[in-house]
Image (cartoon, rainbow, N blue to C red; front, side):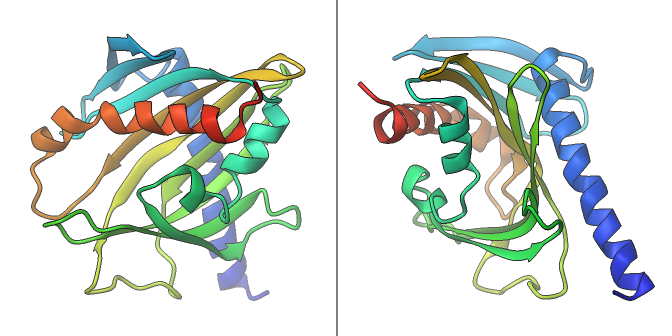
Length: 216
């Protein structure tokens, strides 16, 4: 590996670690740039909205309980081949580059399905998984640039400030999962319009986790 390649890999690794830090900070309130307010509790999902001091785009935090082990859920949510299954807005996801031998830190390219009349979005991100001493599993994602995936005229390249999951074991066969999302979808859709619509999708996503991966 050349010194330039090593420097770029280290940059990606730093961003991967930063994604974990930011997810945890948004969850525990130590991120003072985001002010959270509770929106609703519905169908076993609790949802908060975060107003960010540096972005017109709101952050969303949603939590539910899934009746499977934390390890099982993490393995599904961090599997690029599962993403189009659990997230109905995703068309496909693939790994562009593995940053470590265990592949817990990877560069991924995601194409979303188009929603008429808007142009489809795509995402180029670094994704990281970290296991904490208390048994929690954190999956964090942030936008990056990579020479092998230039911006395409067929997509609007969205920007993920940070997104991910905190999966906490409750029992050997149940866990809580918190989804945190803060992204800029780009294009011509005003942020305030997306902010108004931003609560429904996380609720449906977490309910889908329960259906797909929970055990009765």
